[in-house]
Image 1: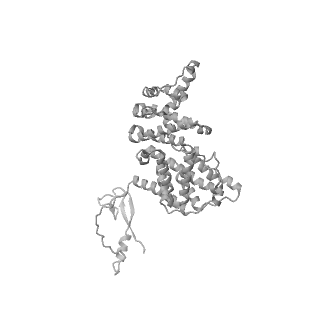
Image 2: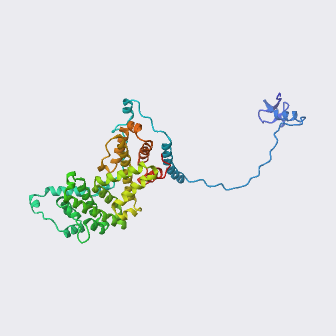
Image 3: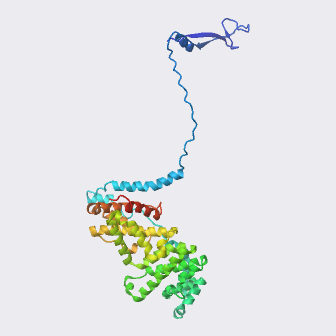
Length: 423
C-alpha cells in the first residue's frame, strides 16, 4: 500500500507550523522549512475499517498466577562430595564392562608404547616412620659426632649399664647415653625390668618424653634394617627379635588407650611388621591370592585387612578411631592385595615375586607392581584369566594417585572386589 506523506511548513526561527508567509505570531518568516509527516499508520487503519476481520491479533486469556516456593538446590559442597564418591565407582564399572586392551603387534611397538622407568610418574605414599624420626635426626647426628671424638679411653672404660640405669636415662632424656647403649648393647633397650620396658616407660611419662620414644623407635627400626639373612638363625638374634616385638606390642596397646601415644602407633606397627620377616608376608600374600581366585565370594579385601589387624594384638583388631593407624592398616592391606594378585600372575607366567622386604616400606610395593605390569603386559594379556586381568586393572586404577586417603581407596576396593558383581 502506498504511504502518503504530508509536508508541513515550519518556521525556521520560531519552529511554529505555518501555512503562509507569516507565522502565527504575525512575523514574516525569513526561512521556511518543509518537514515531512508520516501518516502511514493512520492510512493503514482507515483502510481496514471496511473489513470484517481485522488482522490484529486476538488477545489471549491471562494465565492466573499461583505463587509457590521452589525446592532449594543442593549446595556446591554437597555436589562435590557426591561426585568424589560416585566418580571412582563409575570408573570401576567401566573397567568391568570394557574389554581388555589389545596387546601390541610387534616388540618395537611394545617398546614404544610402554613407559620407561624414568618417565613413569612417581607415586609416593605418606611415610609414617621416617617422618616421625626426622625430628630426632639432628640429635642422632650430634650423638654420632660426639662418639667419634671420644678416644680409646672411652672404649676401654665402657661398662654395660644396669636396667635401672637405662630407665633413669629415659627419665633424664639422656639421649647421648641412650645412643651409646644402642650401639654397644642394643638388647638393653628391649629388656623388660620390673614389668616395664624403656619404650613403654617413655610413653608413660607423657608428651614431655615423646622425643625419647621416637629415638627408641628409630633405634628399633635401624636394628631391624641392619639384620643380615644369616643372622636370623642366631639364637641370640631370635631372642632380641622376640623381645623387640614384645616391646612394640605393649606400646601399641598402650597407644590405643592413651591419647599421647596414639600418633606413634602406626610407626610401632610398621616396625613390628618389618621385624617379622618374610615368613608372615609370604604366608598372608598366599592367603590373599587364594581369596582373589575365589572372586567376590573369597572377600580378598576383608581377608587382607583382618590379617594386618590380627597380626599385632587383640586391641589393634578393635581399633578404628586413630587416623594414622587406620591409614597405615589400609596401606598394608593394599600391599597384601597387590602382592597376592601378582603372586597369582607369577604362578601362570613363571615370574619372580615382589620382594617381601618391600612390604610396609613407603611405596615400594606399588612401584614394583606397576613396573611389572608394564614390563609383562603382553604376557598378561595373552595368558592370564579374565578375572585376574580385571583384578590387576582395578588395583592399579584405584591405588593410583594421592588425592584420596588409603582408607578411602581400600573401601572402594572392598565395594568392588568383595561386594561387587565380579567378573
